[in-house]
Length: 358
Ligand code: F1P
Image (tube, rainbow, N blue to C red; front, side):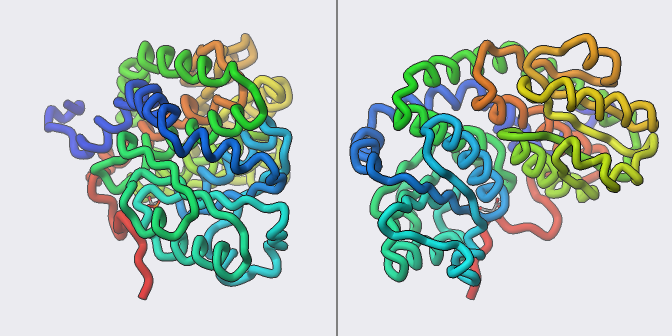
């Protein structure tokens, strides 16, 4: 129930957000038992350039997976929107001898994603791996191999647990390719830590949303967390029709900070590698009057001095796994701020669950 006493709109989306600590280990266990996962590992060993492809949330997932892959597997990895493969293939510099493509689509039906998979396989002779929550889909039929995570699918339009679970599946795969056997256990720790905190996070965000009026939202992150900032901005736009922007944290000083006022909500996704420099920006934005949300693994004294609200995920996990727990408070902010503005996040304005082109 929200403060107005009415039953909350967005109930399906909220339930899916809150289910993530349970879904992560369940979906990944199911996947790792499957033959595709193991076969894929042996198949892909000789591939050294990895190209992750998607649309919308699945593109930001592709960016997050590419960063994680680079760190975990020691191979070159990058991300492109599916539309770039279709419209500017020469710019993509596709080397059929070295490249492995990973096409990500929750529905497995997004026209751009399916067409990009077809073009990569048929026109550019690049091997394709599909990642989806919909096993029997056009994407699965277009790729040589497909990893499916049906347990992570949503009833809702907005992608929440599908984003985090498909991300963690790719982290687990990248770690296995890099012979890092510690990541699977850290994913379980991240799930356990979030299970202990997610209800409190939900209450904090609902209270924060009810108490503030914001004109715009800014999301800031560096390194492997930058795609989280991009996805967080999309969530608050999709669910609350609010203006949102994502920047590399230190980039924000170079002009965009002109917008900061008491009606600006700034969320800092704090890494461990760059926390000192990131906290200096956070302190400066606090001094400019912005409302500050900090999402971190452990809150330092500098974080406690500058942030109005802190979400400590506190899982003993490597930085490469941070995107999954860190996006959860941002998903909740998009939902509760949307409800506050009178929207129903289960039925976002102007959006369809899948973008199908003629
Ligand atoms: C991609 C997507 C979603 C967005 C909306 C429209 O879907 O852009 O990210 O939230 O649902 O489609 P998919 O290709 O991952 O199914």
